[in-house]
Image (cartoon, rainbow, N blue to C red):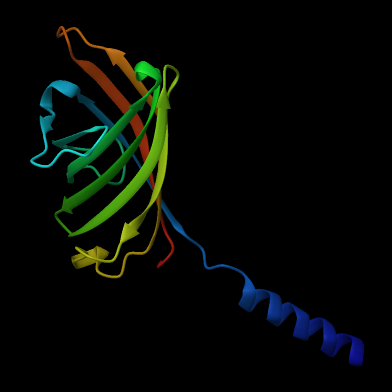
Length: 159
């Protein structure tokens, strides 16, 4: 009888310690660098750009992300580090996220988190992580610009 009580107690403790199920959202992001504009303030040793982009092909369809990115190239531009902050506006609410990542001739990836400031509507309690995966930058048909693509993954842990 004590063995059953111990087993039941362990099951309850393990269930309580298990993380809550997260809600995963995926959307494709694609843009041409020709839409980027220099930010008002520039970081030392890097460049800051701003632009708006509309994710497509996923849960963020119809949303617009206003992005500010600091890019810090290294080794004559063969690789670098980026810091990005986005304000996302959707019909059902708003949220902000940041990410940090790296890039080289093979592409880029980044990771970050949903920020507490700027949340409203369906996102008013949003918490969680984000990732930018499968990032590619390729020369575009318009001379001097590049086409950028990646998948934006949002893992909401508040759901």
